[in-house]
Length: 180
Picture (cartoon, rainbow, N blue to C red):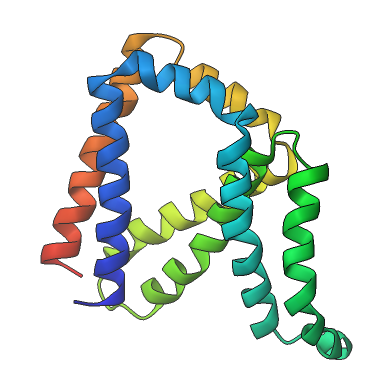
């Protein structure tokens, strides 16, 4: 099983789960989307995941004259986590989700790059959409509420979005098992 098939399976399972939840319990999904931006613990947990991942990615980059500062990442990362939790609590969940989307797109693009199948472009497009959405959430977190309000305005909108996510998730799982 290739790296792209594993990535497609994970993305497909996430999309399938989200789609089935939207189809099965639209009211709960609407409440969850409305409550997420101000949620304290999801923001703290996501920040505690994203900041070490970002530090690890930063330590692997060539930074030129700033390479000497990489040794300080070991003590700066826990400090950054605490400072983000204490002072950046406003919409931290959405900002951390944006960081997670940005960081998750990198490994997916790396495994998709060398796959010979033209179907790899589906996963590539999803990763680039994650990058755009991650930038929006990181820089303008209030857009999450606008997007969530639009996507969950009516039960029909949630059903349509859930059906699209379910079909896309099933399609990615099929691609992961048969093509990649």
